[in-house]
Image (tube, rainbow, N blue to C red; front, side, top):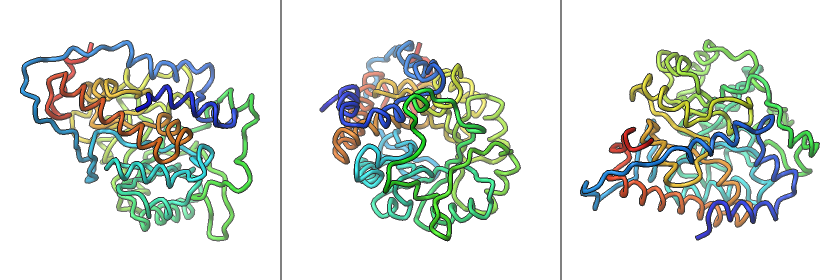
Length: 341
């Protein structure tokens, strides 16, 4: 079984350089992008012993959705840049792994088609200024079978990504489109960043969908406090993979204080920088209920399609299982902050 780094190297060889940079790049000088991984490297595990871990279990349930392991596939755009089967390949592999696939609003495959091959499907939303269109997109996702809504809230404007400017990457190749952005006429709309989104807009979303609602992009503890007070069903502790604000706090560094404030009242999912099972265990020990992975899945997809995605998820499962047991825990709920320094 290949490492994630090995799969990334293969993906880099196979992808158009502009498309590789689109996936791999971050905002500005990419300090936050690097910090997401470095924060995991700078923290070490301090295992416990003699804890009778012969029988241990990775499965968790989040907002009514079952996961065979505390790892889900985060929303990432334009999978068909990586492989012709795109989101269908990713969703099939994720279903085989028994976990959640979060379909991006910027998917190059329509959510209705993704839903046919996915098992547990969530849908990611950028709130659009046209509320009628936003509601239509939500209805499409809910009617297709999405079980939860993930609202991205860290994108008041688009981050400046130097690699995209350097490559003049602005449009998808002919034949590809953000299929969830088609309106009733069949025209594909541009995705707007929600510059004027407020907490009151979330109240409106509550009125037009019955799906549990997660906020994605929360790193400030006061925003986490307000989210809980507002009745949000879960939080993604995330800095958008370092793609929005360079110099922003890393996701893992933000996690402990948010976990303290939330105090188990809603599930926390961390994304950004997770590259191994040891990383998964560190995040769980510091307060996450699950982690999301994005770029590693894209590297697997570009390297070997559905089989590559399956390889990434299986590797993370095996590494997490090993790290969990070696830390003296029988399940993710037994991981505690004293195991990380």
